[in-house]
Image (cartoon, rainbow over all chains, first blue to last red):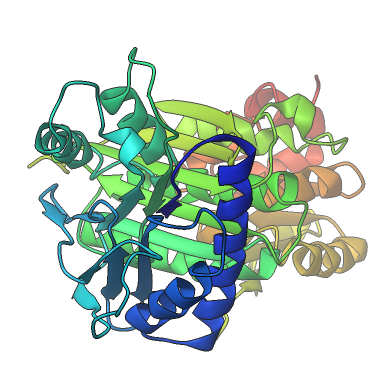
Length: 318
Length: 129
């Protein structure tokens, strides 16, 4: 996530150049500090790039960690499983196009295990007139702690409404939220290509995770089937069976005995039977989702469609 | 790498049983039937149904989704078929929600084969509307 000085067409043009350069630099180097050093050298020849800030993070899924650097940008944050908020304060360097003699590259790493949430943002999210940045950051940390059990697609809206609410922000706001694929005792995150062949593998993982929750057999099967139907719909209707698109599955077992599962895809569809084509039996999937869960909620937005189902359980909270 | 799919088992109906008297085969579905492999299941079952009336027992399937139920409806429309989902099967709630005409056990399903109108009435509101 980056931020250039100023507003309007000129700032947009500068941002566009920096974005392209960053995308290229990211292919040329692995170390985040080296990537930003390359971007900095390029920025010196870009009009109005002076003092642009950027937070750049690389997720290493295999080792469950995040490697990052920040050029004058607000700290990225990680919400750990359970809601503890950690600021990523390492890897600092000055903003772009400001140093005459760049210091040695610095990058930092932190843990990013399954069940965590990484959030990058621009300072428009935390700044309010007449308020210190510390106060804004503390408010953001408190808001982020409540996002530990939210599907990643809902995090942006939750933070925006907690932080900006009725205040009209003075500046643009950008938020990027990322969850790693993987399971913990209480969370499951999966990502699959929008292809029917991918369904059995994800179902196997969900079944194994549900087994760990020690649910009644009928309830566990009902959850497995309801989620399976939502995944079918996301693949067939939300993604048009295009295997280059991805479908996300996020499940959270709350201490209150509530289990929620969100299935998301990048395409848009209404989640209604009228959007299911002409097969006379296709409405059955939705019927099962509604009948086997306590609530089905569909949210369509610019980033796609997500369907969240809630299931009450007798045993989870104990 | 792939999860095991489904298996169709032909059960021994026993000499002198109602199923034998009705000339019906009893097919038990094991494993998982979903949108990915439902076409395979449908062609295998259509072949079996072409040989004579069948009782299809879904009670012990590990997974059976709406694509599978849609297949059963299609078979019901063109073959002599009766469906068993036992009351203690994990599939029972789903089959009931959809309104699939179903029977508690094989004996009841054989009766259903003899009088299909009856079975539909017992299965609920599914097919007629």
